[in-house]
Length: 395
Image 1 (cartoon, rainbow, N blue to C red):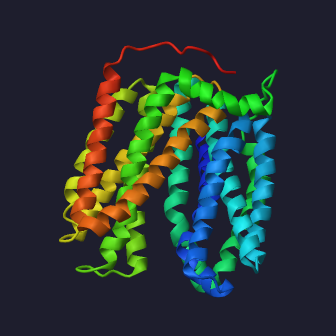
Image 2 (image 1 turned 120 degrees about the vertical axis):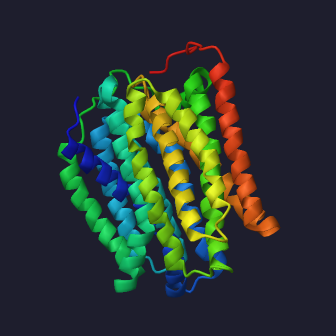
């Protein structure tokens, strides 16, 4: 089917709203901890719960799109997400709060990736990259805007209002999204659930593009989180000593580059996926040059952020366009691919804090540049491998 600009804008906004629920808690931890009398370790478990929910969604919930009617499945997930958000709003004890946070991460991720799989499955081959890029642009907007929106609402009306507003918005979204979602019928002979989940391993074994693009995703999101995880540590100390609000504002700077990368899907549609990948990987390496001057210049930092986010999101959109190129098993393809994303993000965050503690910003930049070069070298080596047909087809 063909996607109008208005329909794509609604789908992108839907993705932004859904993914934001996974990240609202990060700037609110101190407020939540004070309200429920939590210690620092328990407060950190709130973010862990939402991220754990995201991984569980990729493994066990996102693949359901290849078994059931996608539109009905997404509507059911939206309803459950609204209830989970209401549960966070009402929670008065740690246990129920963590359970509701896990469900918010689970369902927010399932909705976000399910939307991408749904539009990819229904788009024509000639525009699949364009529509995936548009919805992915919404995801980026939600990722970067969640912290700003959550902080603003919490300052005005308290942290619980963030989740009350989001729950109400999710209900309204369900009312308008039903008509906007493309109708994609379920397979005529769907796999049993156990086989459906097990087939994800078969996809990784048989699909060379999925494996290669997954490894690129792991490395590039490690780079992304090496930078963003260490940035707050660097800017909060001398010589800048910026407040948290100012530090968070640099995320909005990255939005310029990230939204600029939406056109990468159009290039993939025209057969330029490899050229886009090479240019983006070179930019990823080059971004660390201005970033290295962060202690001396916030202007250099801003330029580096734009370059870094442009490179990462161009790669992300191109990767998704290429792994979804056939329209076969899109939900499982997305689930497999995003597991590489999760692994790279976690590893990058851990490596960043260790590097900053051991050698400061200089070591962080060396680490980020080194992983960026490793991603470029991997792609160059993979590009020289002879093309191979998939060993097996997965329904």
